[in-house]
Length: 155
Image (cartoon, rainbow, N blue to C red; front, side):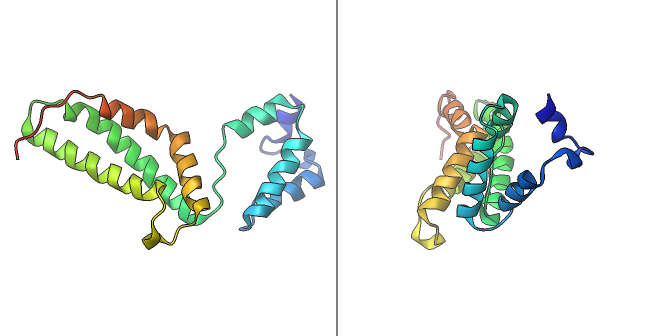
């Protein structure tokens, strides 16, 4: 209970200075510094189950380009979910529009989670986007789409 109340708004004065300093390290651009700061926090609060539960529910995104792609992927995910119904539709135009939208989103996601020389991405960027995709539940939605019974659209 003490740990929860410490991090509530208005109770900042309860947070010891060393925790504020370590928390500040996760704001810097250097991934190594962020990682070490998180390790110190996790080790310090190892016995505090509330802190560990909080950390499990948080996605730490270090670089701005990954953050931008996260928001694109999250928006795409909502659109992709809305395509599942129309993909099963008997109305050709609805089905065609849903197929095009689904194809566009899946193509964009493939670019996000695979290493491509044209993007200048590192292995780290790609693995970070794969982690983000996994935490958003992208695989579950893709599996739902794969399992949707569809009729072939005449060309």
